[in-house]
Structure formats: C-alpha cells, structure tokens
Amino acid sequence: MALVWLAVALSLPGLTAQNGSCAETLAKSDTQRLFEKVFGNAVVPDAARHAQVKSGKEGERHWFDTNGDGRADEVWYIDTALRHPEAMRPVLVRVLDEDGDLKQGDEPDTDSDLYVADWKADGTVDVVLDYSDHDGDNDVDEMGMYFVGDTHSYFHEPTIRVWWGLDVGDDNLLWHDIAYTYDQTLCQFRTHFGGDELFVAFALPLSGDRWVSFFENPFLFYDRDGDGVTEEVLRISGIENEVEAIRWSFDTDNDGTRESPRDFDCSI
Image (cartoon, rainbow, N blue to C red):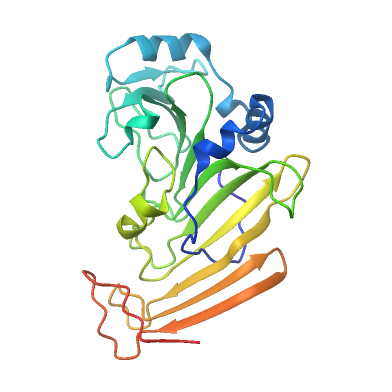
C-alpha cells in the first residue's frame, strides 16, 4: 500500500494536523471514497469483525484469516496505549499484514504492515498509518500518515493527505504518532527529525489521479559526519512546482547531540 516512490524529501510539519475536525466537516461518503481511492478493500468496513472486537475486552487481539489459506493475515484490537487522547478513545485498529510474516498470536510490526484506525470505534475510518520495508531487513524504511483534509483553495475539493517520510540513513527511527496520526504539539519533539531523512506532504484530490506535493515540499535532513545527528537541513515549501519559500539551516559549530539534536546556528 506504500505511496508511489518519488524522488523528493520529507518535511517537519508546520501546522498541527487536525485530522478529526477536518474529516467531520465532510460528507462521510467523501471521506470513505478518498480512503478507498488509495487503499481499496483494506479500508472497507467489516461490520461483523468490528462488532466482535468492540464488544470484546479492550486490548485483546483478534486474529483473522481473510483469504482462507490457513494463516492469519489481519489482527484487530482496541488500542489501550496511554499516548492516545481521551477524545479519540476507544481507538479500534485493524492491522493488515503486507509482507506475510504475521502468525497467530504474533503482534503486528512496523516493517510492512498497514494500520487502519477508527476513532471512537464508530465504524468509520479516520486515519491510516502505513509502514514499508524496502531493503528486506525487517525494519521500517518508509512511513505514511494518511488523513482526510478539508477543502483547500488550491484543490477546490476534499483531499486525502499524507505525511510521507523516508529513513535515508536506515536508523529505523521516523515519526511518533498519537491515535495513528500526527499532532504537532504532542508529536514533534518525540519524532525523529534527524540523521539522514526526508519527508514531503502530499495531497490527492477526490477527482484527481495523482499525488500533488503540498506544503513541505520537501524537507531534507543531512547527517554529514555519520554521528546520527543532522548538521544541515533544507526546507522547501510550496504546492506542486510552485516554490513559496526556501530555508537552509546549518549547525555551524557541530555541537548538536542526540539529546539536543536541533541546534542550528545559521539559516539562509
């Protein structure tokens, strides 16, 4: 389910992603259509399984063999992690095993699994979190946080959006989430914007057929000396091919540390 590969970078979000409030302003059919446009049957509700999980014990795992091959390929549960805000609870999660390594009794992983989250367990998809492993080493190399945005003046219609990140340095550290999405206030300083990484914000309009780079476009992090700490960042903001601003920053005295990684002394 990974986003089509694009030779662009990832960026530190400048706005809090208010995914819930955006989605609530749209017709439910548009929200569902946007998710299905990207993920197909993976986000089509299954009422029977949803009811089984919702009526069960919170935190209990439910494994399902959806294709009849004798092997579990999905696990569902109510996520009880303390990081999830009360306003979004209960968070009902459906995890689809995309690389065939899930076994009955196993926990889902973050190398190549797709997490579909239903806030308040009301039967609707609110956000999707997708992890991908590109080099076969069973750890995360890419992740995307997908949510439905409100109508922007550039698109003139609802869009599905994604914060798309790539772990270039292969340190297996990317974004922190709450309720399977990103909130700048709660997530920024727990997210690994460091080392060698990149991210981009993309949007796909309801009637569109391609992803459009949107907002942070891209945001690039460079670890020049291989110590796991970024010494140089380049942030380009704009929509599609229109550049609105460029910021190029440096840790000129190279005194950033893993404990205090954002130590940039000069910006252009």
